[in-house]
Length: 445
Image (cartoon, rainbow, N blue to C red; front, side, top):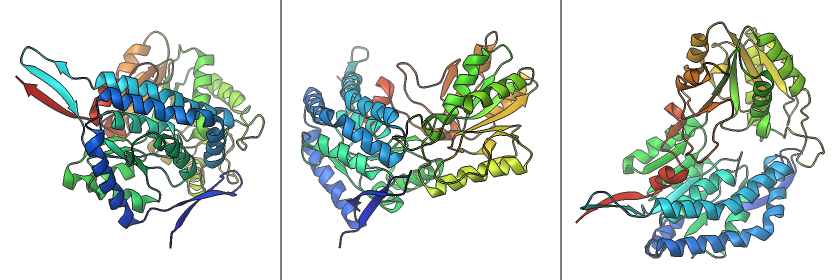
């Protein structure tokens, strides 16, 4: 008897649809079929793979609007943001493929050596629910362009939109080159322990460490982004309006359910009163609501477990002396109203862990050294931001993160997506990242 995975609308709890759960026994069969398909896929010229990829994404183009509505309902983000994610995925897929093709070309080094980029075999792509298509696409495309076949396991929170997207691509791609499996952590662990050669994962640090342990026996290639607890430093000479706008937008984007959301803000005590008042004024304009509610810009929290975690972080801060400037711990599911907390301290959960909710958490500092020390005092190191003028670059240079923004957010421009410390193991994006999905081979002649 087939078991079904049910997907619910987080705004109202209504059932959206079901997909068949992949049995643990079937996971290995899926991987075996991927291994067989890899024999032909890897032998195609990279231009042939590119041509098929472009044709595959053409299949999805007419359905961008429908997929956007499904993504909104399944994940909770508003239709404008969902449409941006879907169109970016569908229209950006061929661009990533072109970029990967250029990155994976053989190149000469000196007179007697050639560097080649060869397929690894089968890639397991495991992606999260907060950007269910965009994050998966960033891993699927370079995997396929490198000549690997892919077994894709989307989050159990957003299986419908992932399944729909894959079905369109499968209309063109050769059989079993791209397959999808469904389930929870049990299926994910089975996939990691199967005969795959590469594991590309985006998700929590805890799951990333578990994947690393399970993959160690086969020394499987790992490319992992493992979340963040991103700090923001506001210097006394910062552009106040720009800093406030960024602090609120970055904390509330996608209901705070974003790996590079601003989680901790350290502001110079000389400007802190004005900064806090301005943040509250702007944050008060945000409205929680469902994906199709006019004026809503903070969607629902994905599930009860995550909602309870956010409330726990807020309550912990309250009990340890933080000032609640807006919102607070008295919140009803499935939403978290815009919340602003001041005077956070290193003892609070909110400063030590990733909250992943629409909370602006602020602390004052006396010296820049103190601000930098607290910003760096974390096992995470995905992104960091500093706003200021005179010493802004010197402060930015001291921040321990894979991506640092100066008077703006991170992830902009033609650069890889990189996490430092325990926020990343390997990286993806642009030529440097695309090459991680291939085996380097040096030919001497």
